Length: 169
Image 1 (cartoon, rainbow, N blue to C red):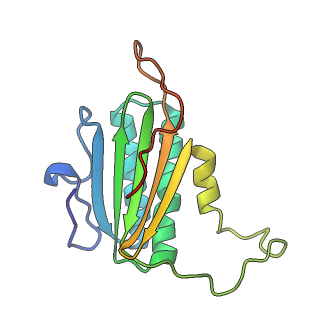
Image 2: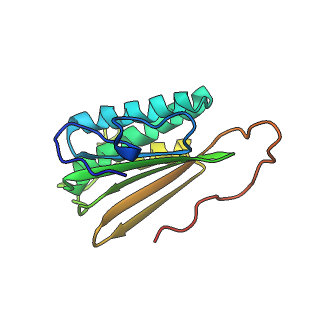
Image 3: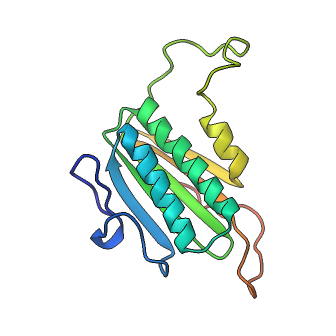
């Protein structure tokens, strides 16, 4: 993965802008944390899923997961950068979002009845709704969230069962 120095630009694998070729099974990029990074990284996920010719359900899941996780970095981490990695195998799509910040707690405690109409605060529950597994690792050097989305196995490939994520280190 390449680290981006210019605000607003994204770099994919091998220094190419934006996205991976259709034959790759991995794509990644880094971006400065700005509101524009949310839509750019979501677009990268969408375009990559389309190039890989995965089902619409995988595209929807990836777009929601990337949007929620990158928005969490923007709102809560204080990190200057965010990294997105998407890996495809025969039966899963693994999405990882990493930052180098520290979680900033809410200014006021959440109060369930009063927060019922809130338009935020549903990021990880939405990720959990789309993912078959989700792991969050917070360390002194930042936070990594990895979510796995099930995708249909290509013809002739036996489906695996159970969690596919190796532990985060």
